[in-house]
Image (cartoon, rainbow, N blue to C red):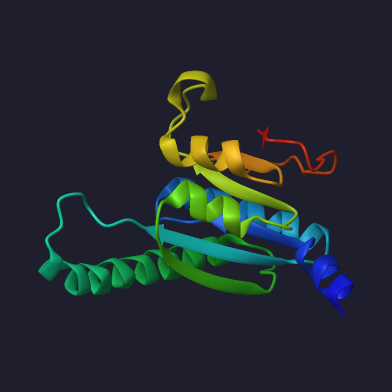
Length: 166
């Protein structure tokens, strides 16, 4: 039974989504990756509390952050789905925490993690902290898709020690 669960997880493509056009491009690529291997997409949206919270702010900000994350995820899925030939099975996950670490944990056992890149700047100097943290600690390949482009390459040559594919 445990072996079957692991095999199923290996066909999951994790997509980090924040509602931005770059994350919609990443989600579209995740759809393509999942379809090509008969798998599914786990759509993960993470929010962080702003610094300087007082004890009384917690619950109100938690609810506001959760509402934002659910709305951002639904909008991104709707946008990506409108342009997709076929939408694979989807699972939505909304989590409070540090995005890079949460995404890396979500990718454990998955085929890959797909993230969007908001600018056309090369990765060497323009990595944001979410991508950097995710790439540093992910146990599966991390695919970074530039905003406004549909990445046509598959992760066919990916191995467990791969870190980033463009």
